Length: 480
Image 1: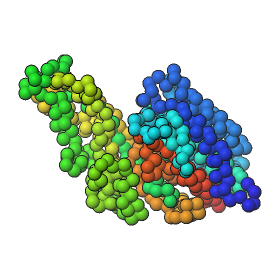
Image 2 (image 1 turned 60 degrees about the vertical axis):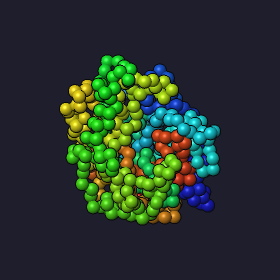
Image 3 (image 1 turned 90 degrees about the vertical axis):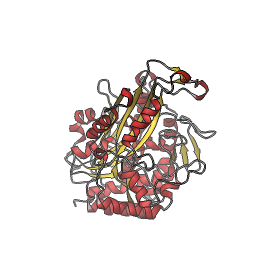
């Protein structure tokens, strides 16, 4: 880096000349997560994505860095990069006692319908500051930004601790293979004192957003069967109960229809006072953007609460129910006058960050299956993922984040919980209770992860890369 080049200018050139073109190629690859592509091995898309990222990282490696694709039997691969410490106290010994772990994933959600004309999940399109396509923002950029931050420190002659970059291939499926990799690679990962994750969201594109919590999840299928086969609705209705009506009745055991409030005690949790204060601060920064960032249809412009702080807490700390799929319902053009034999609903229940998912799954199963109306065949099969609540923020990290946000965004950082899940964070929180966490990301207003028209806001990606570099430098200096 020349003496006239600022850190942000270096990062911007790296993104423009190398990262964005590689992300264009990455978006073209339909590497859907294992749950959405059971034949992922045969299709080879995941291996193509792995090879693309592996190749870029090897081409952009810093001195002493290793890049390896690790494959355990019958599991999705991970990319493991190890970067020796530079200029910090443990640089000469190469110890792993003080490691920074940087995490991301390379698998993607399914296509979804509704992409605007000229856009598509596997069709990368750059319009002004936005790079459209599936997986660029969630979270394909993470590997490039993580290594880019380390490269920036080398160009600036700055110190950093030993760094491990771990990129997995199953996050969108709940990270089922990750515990086995964490166990198998424990010695190589070391003992992280700082975890950096770039798979989260941001409330706007004007500042650095730090995630303080993540909700857990119960995900499963409710099946209600009343007949062995469909029969004429004029013949059976009034005698045979509707499977849809039974399913609707059962959902009322979980959720109050008028308010959306979840009724099961096992899915509730007290909200810490600090998180309430942070939610109020978020509401003050975002104002009506708390809700008007969503593409409401027609006159549907009224959110589920009039108080902005309560809306933030609804999204981040309260349980909610979404019906995300259905079976047994024919398409409208094929819907005859038939009383259908069954209705199946895919249920997604978001849990408070500190609600144990195992007990929540059990409570949902009991509530749905006990005393089924009319003696119908009712089953619920599901699993869960724990949420995560960040440990207290160390003074050095709080000061570092504040400086970085002001330096590169020109505004103070904001701390906010997120409504989604990153299973890896709960795993790491349990395994490394002394670690500090910097969870952030580029998924801001309109970026629409998992949906149509997903985009990566390129300027935010650049600024975030520079912020992470500064935090890594401050981490190396914290003990001096």
